[in-house]
Length: 335
Image 1 (cartoon, rainbow, N blue to C red):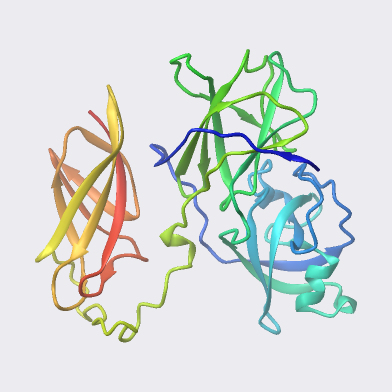
Image 2: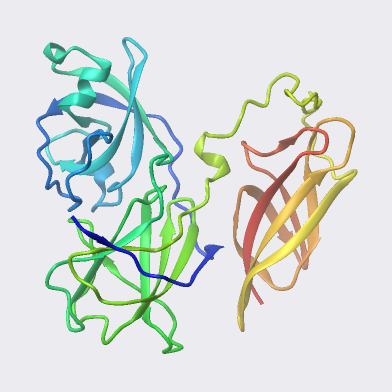
């Protein structure tokens, strides 16, 4: 397939909405089938470097799993393989994954037929820039668009006509992995706001309605701390830093905080907060902020609010900071 690339103005920000990330370990049975392309996710046939799989109907969840990359482990042998979800397995039980034949062969002899597995969502390490693709037949009167090559699963695509000044409108997700507006987007170009399952968003502006070609967004979701890719926190670091204290009581002593506004509008705003441990030893951190308004969403931390005071401690993956180390959390608030 020919690919046409357009120069697009792109801004990356954190979403002001509820994250639905799934960092749990799933269990079920692994099987295989002869994948020939054209799966339920409506993706083009992948190249030979990408293994694929069909997700059970429950976890497929109306195409929410499409394009997700999962690491599958044969629990008998501990052999693993990484696959992209391109299809649905309607008859598979919750937790089951139907692997393409080559992927199955990486973790089991084919003659086994059915094996016990565990699996988890991981970042798509092969993703370059995210792409947008309009379904054939799309027009200003009926429009369907999908995202491709995203680092994490997509939870929402919103649109507006560029330059209209309108708020973004949510699009209906279909089981065949397109986001659709039955009466069309109107005359383009369009702006899109795309949200992943960590609650991260990217905004892609001035996208023309071009059929049969992938449109390069020139952007990608950032790597998220909570996806399991962060390093080991045990023992002394290679840089000689001291590991976090064995005392797990959160402390705010010698903890520096800096705030940056990601987006702001009449009724609310979103911020990213950087927390830095200025101690010469590791700590489990806690901070308080004086803020305007009421927080309605906060990610990468645990929080409570009393009046104008926002109290935050770390999440399970970022609550411990070695000497000199930093982490971030973000929040959105109504004014």
